[in-house]
Amino acid sequence: MSEARNTGELPIYLDHHATTPCAPEVVDAMLPWLSGRCANASSVKHGPGKAAAKAVELARVQLAELLRCSPKALTFTSGATESLNLALRGTFGAYRDRGDHIVVAATEHRAVLDTAHALKAAGAKVSLAPVDGSGQLQPGVLDELVNDSTVLVCVMAANNEVGTIQPLAPVVAAAHAHDAFAVVDAVQAAGKIPLDLGASGVDLAAVSAHKMYGPQGVGALYVKQRPFVSLTPQLVGGGQERGLRAGTLNVAGIVGFGAAAALCRREMADVAARVTALRDRLQAELHAAFPRARLNGHLEARLPHNLSISIPGLDAGALLGTVGDRVAISSGSACSTTSLKPSHVLESMGMKPALAYATLRFGLGRDTTAEDVDRALTLLIPAINAHRVLAVSD
Image 1 (cartoon, rainbow, N blue to C red):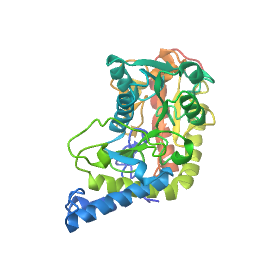
Image 2: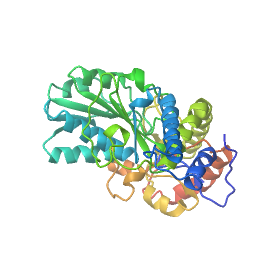
Image 3: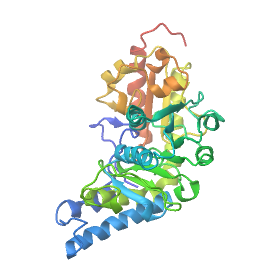
Image 4: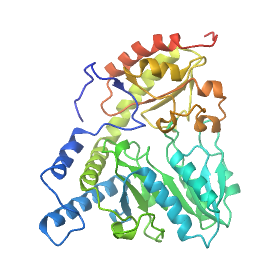
């Protein structure tokens, strides 16, 4: 594990849901492909091209070992958003003759919800599956929503805001009972908790390098091979990635993705245990300072590095404007922080807007230290008190 420590000159980084720093080992693996080595992985008629292709295939194996699936099931993309678009649009397009209905969980990332909205404009019927107060799908809801016209069901493996882990077996069962496809957004889960895509029964799953200490701008889509899932390609013009995703491969990024996958495979259990302890310490100190603080998400089935907490009376947006240069945290999903609307995840869990606006999200990482947590608390507790704009008695 990296021995990097916060020197006090940079902000304390506790926003690992939004992106993770590229691990030094990953940077080292990428550097040769960013400078001295230059080749297109499709140019396999000469030595440099063969070397690039070999490096890509090694990364594919490394990622497959982390996800426990066949390397042939992995298609490299530019990131999770592209992977999810390919999964949803590609599946709906390829199996349009089967039906016109899709089901997505109400707490999905905007990459899924906005794609579903676009498919709706193109003629799809879209159902939002409700969740309970912990962010998990309500029991039996998929059995009620999925029908013989359903093409796909899309659910997160773990939520990016509240960290709730979703059991995948009921999702797969509900989808397959009607010959629909089970699509999983595994972006936040990959590299943080064990995944076994090969044994899970899911048909498609999206992952992203920059959520697991790899570079930004590279992702992958798992596409089950047996029985094979057909997809309508969304990018054409070169035939790369077995025709599923055209475009010159980002060799350096893919190599980094593979190195990050290997790193997570080695360290995942140890990092999870360590960051869970730090997360619990952070949670306990905030509860001690603010007894009415509310923990969001499932109490047990949640990501080890996640803490979503609502502090009644807090103006979370104003707080971030004050402390953001010293402590990097979020008031919700990083992809929606420019919106003035309450988090759709928290709303779907039944939270009232006032409390949603009082929510902070902490994401710890492999380099987070006890000192980082203590320094963050020293900065945050007085700042939170200063920004509690409502009359709240603890």
